[in-house]
Length: 202
Ligand code: ADP
Image (cartoon, rainbow, N blue to C red):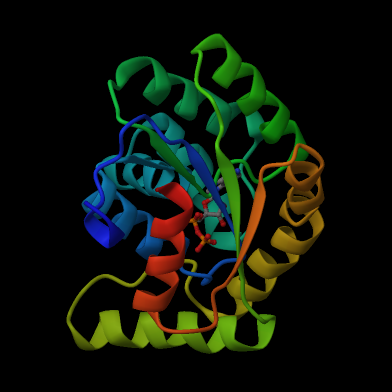
């Protein structure tokens, strides 16, 4: 089969890189649905920890609400646990790595688990539309009676974007240097972007 529902003949492992609101979560879900990959989202894991009221959740809640990054050790630990527990067709790393130290740690983990990184996919979006996108997402959730993410407000978003540019954007050059960077224009329609990503993983 070809196209969106193509069955993969071998495991595929990709990183989704991009600022908050770039659509990493949305595209990761589509890759899960269409290609059977397993999504590893550190943001989701941290929000679950927070919702469960665990000690870890309590430790990260305020950092997340400020829009800052939680410490590398915490997220590296979460990812390691998932890699050791899952028997997957491949992984989508969504929101991880977010610092150079996390990228180095991921490289070591992948070696340890004998997993090959096929691509780091950069979702390119102008900062200007990110604020609008996220405030729109928050308003939609609210209108539908769904919970709104505690960090989906203008003030925290400015901090999240700052953290992205200072700590995460350098990963673009890092993965370019490793010869695995793919850049996708993520300003357009969800379907069109999903097609491009499907082509990359196929
Ligand atoms: P987004 O990409 O929309 O900003 P995420 O759901 O990926 O959102 O992350 C939400 C928050 O969780 C981040 O602002 C940060 O506080 C924390 N977080 C998630 N992943 C990481 C990570 N790899 N390293 C450090 N902090 C992280």
